[in-house]
Length: 303
Image (tube, rainbow, N blue to C red; front, side, top):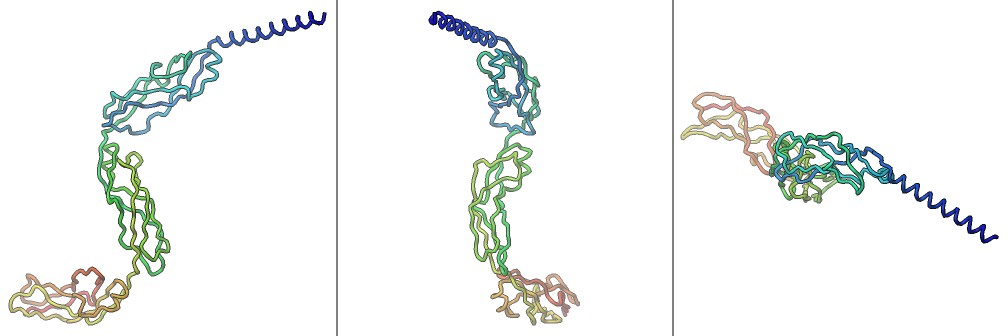
């Protein structure tokens, strides 16, 4: 008797299990529709062109399939491929049809919205621009920033023609010289101020920043003023014959400068007899600078 009861319960449980399985199979065959936001993927862009502006990043795709399959779909399961091999410079329209959508087996694409996308293209060009290092911070008191050099000194950039033609330089990550008392050297990344352009080859630069003693100023008295441009037999008179000159440069050099070593002069080339007021001028020097003369002008008499 007990065995008959157990057998009856076993048959009932099996029937229920089969019914549940059959229900799921039937439900799984029911058709359902759903819209998903799917990313656009561009391919076969001609090497001679650059895509500009803000192209759309995603579109809406309406799909149909088994209810169970459609319910489990994720946006990443679909891909909308846009073939750009026919693109030309300018504004172009591209159709988005169900054929451009890659979907899992058993899923049908009904339509894509929008059905067309507008894309802008420009000719791709390259250009060589100088690398201008960026420096931040302040050296230690008594020191200043001297020459700054980057290696490489220039790089090739590539991008849309309208962007590249406006680029005048590449830059670097900042080199910090805060508190420095001697040369600073750093390996930094080269970048561009315009995101639509790029380096042909990503590169780093070695930037060298010279840290120099701060220049000092000194007023040197009794600097003789010479006359240049005199013709044969002409002896011009200068009044006053000596001036005071403010010079600037490294402290150890400026403190040792003599009045006779500073090249102050007036030029009378092309002038005839008479009296003139002429500005005191200086020959350029490499180690220091002559800033100004007191007085700035002298009287010159040509007999």
